[in-house]
Length: 113
Length: 108
Image 1 (cartoon, rainbow over the protein chains, first blue to last red):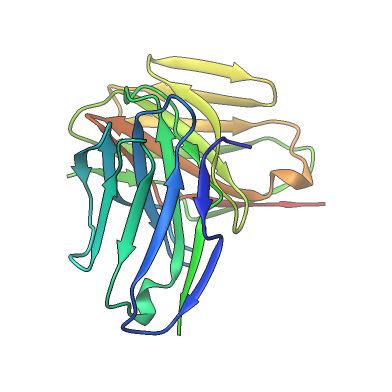
Image 2 (tube, rainbow over the protein chains, first blue to last red):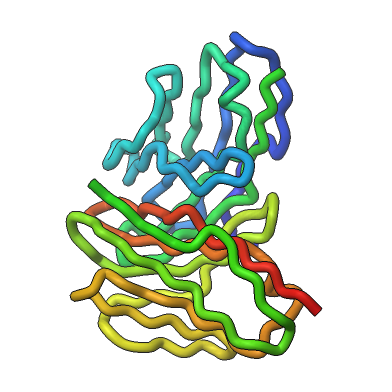
């Protein structure tokens, strides 16, 4: 158990819909990272937050947004969903310094039909 | 830009040794990580290198050459459970970027 909690574990929805994925980092970790992993693909970095502020942005679509709340949990919002958004979405946390390892949650598997 | 390369697939025999290579080009470097990922599961941390040289951790070792932008993960005494994807990741600035991963199949 990494200590990172993601909900929901599985989600099935239709094209055009909007979903919210939630992540609770390990106790004490200030940084939260979101990654997308499509079938048989690598981890694609979406966005990073540190103590409530956006720190780095990857190839995140405009239809996607995220935030980190004062209690340090984070939410990833995906809207106007398309078939190609079907993927595993991982949240990872770290203490903050980029020299520390990332601890991954179990992921949220999104299926868009 | 950031670029990390790894072989897509490798096959090895149970009990053997396998070396998975990783080359990287990043603007800035804080360290290099190796993660193991079984299909459909979360990546788990294997090793971390920040200085040149070899880091040994049981059956797994990782090597780094910063001047060459090169690392490898060495797996000894392969077991069937080592069949997984192995991800090379570089930490730079405030970010971690992952390579495409190498899918290792261990055959009996």
